[in-house]
Image (tube, rainbow over all chains, first blue to last red; front, top):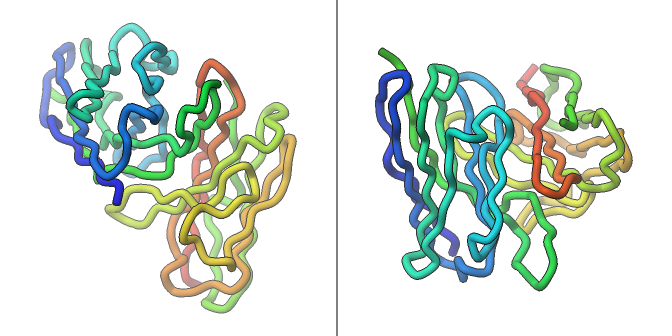
Length: 125
Length: 109
């Protein structure tokens, strides 16, 4: 069974940095696109990062572009999110999410069939 | 950016009722739409993808329909565990620029 376990959340001051990790198991990690999705307290869902199965393509919404960097280590089945220049509006639960699409030679997918339990990031002075 | 708008914001129904939730896209997204259910303090769960395909293990009382800009999630006969928040999400654009609706809260009347 698929398992995604996030870690690394905590409290950080505005302008600071934080690195999140997601340990994946139960599937062939290197075959799947992966994502980070966040949810501010009491608010809806916001997609914040995408990485292709082999790490060759990374995409972000404008709200985090230039500040967040997604990466993966397929040898360790680990997904990461480096967050720099953090702002109070980045305060949220950050979920690691697996794309349902198993790479088969062309780009597709974009919907998330497994999620971690989330890790809380609080940006406050 | 494709904007997703869900209605109503809150839907108050009773167990056994039929629920109809709507999602509208700001431009044509074909059938590139997913629905998720989220219960308090839990991660979202994928219900529907490609607008009408049920994800693995999702009961048949959940159904999705629509294409283009108008989509519907129908729950045929509500059970107590169905009261939750429901989100739609588009995945139409490449390179990825995924967006969610603001959610519909389905509450017990």
